Image 1: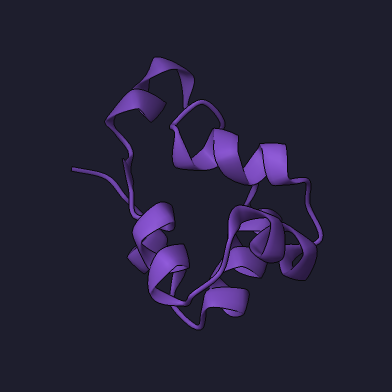
Image 2: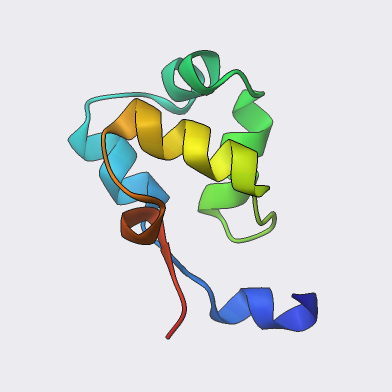
Length: 70
């Protein structure tokens, strides 16, 4: 994806908060570090397909609800 990831629309923080979860709680449920959740929310890290699917399953949404291309 190269540098195009900066254009990726990221709704993770909003959906996490709507679910009433902290970064730490989401990280435990998705089996990833809290730092990874933070990096994804801040657009520093683009998750793998597997991680995106785990997060979407945990938040009861689709991957497209979490991430979109403009």
